[in-house]
Length: 327
Ligand code: FRU
Image (cartoon, rainbow, N blue to C red; front, side, top):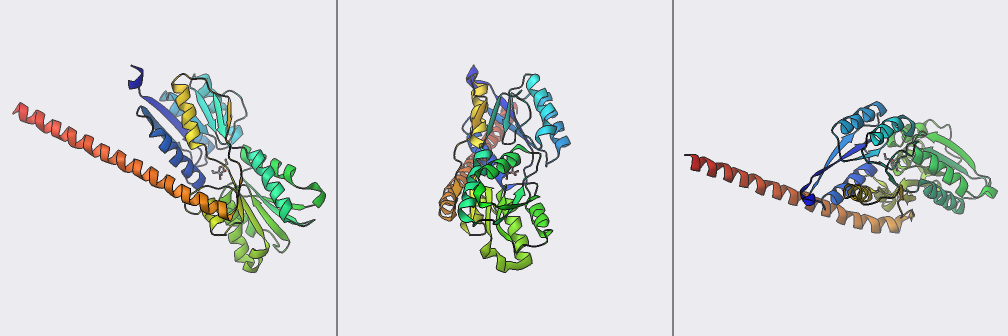
């Protein structure tokens, strides 16, 4: 009977210690809870390519029914992702891309479009020959490359902007430290960081140097994730001026996995819709909605625990019954 069969989804996550990825996990868990016959094994590679390769190999050996990979660095993770696919495991690539088309489906937001939107928005805010500080995510990851290219294409060329770039490697502390190393801040008119946590890091560096610069410098990030110290909160409370929504695709990726498991056809690419600018009022609205999502997730957790304790009580009862019968 098909409905009885249990499936295991393996999920290799390049890092878990990150607000956007935690939001992704919440969305995945809510979607997973819609199905009774799904188990999910999540492995956190902590931004380490070698570790992620080992973990994917382990998931291959455990013969998971579907493998979801959010690769750390595109080049380094490509061979193992291809190996999984060739071993016959349906493989879904999420968020960051690999350099091969040997996978089943790709699910992710449109980083080029986000960059372009950011470039156009920056152009509308800035005077001619303004200076922009661009803070890159890790340069060997596809979203960083696309957010950069889109930004350059979105900028108004006639305005002759001056661009300074540094690499914040997707991390708040690295963005802060790299910004601190810059000789002078006086010229900077706008910060464009490839994600919100780096935008927050840059702001910390600017405040440390000279907090009177803050009202003069526009700060923009990408992601718009919910959670403590994530983009929605930072835009809503005015720490950063704007963000651009990069959906996590947590629910979508599970839906695609379910299609594969139930033998339905899937697309090669699912480019997530929803790319848009998040200004302060939008952030405030989205924050309220995300609170509901978190409540929902907590309720599901609670129900699962209740169910577990009922099952436990039942099995204790059964054991004592058997014991009584034996006596
Ligand atoms: C989190 C993150 C996000 C970003 C994505 C790009 O690890 O840096 O902030 O949107 O990864 O892959």
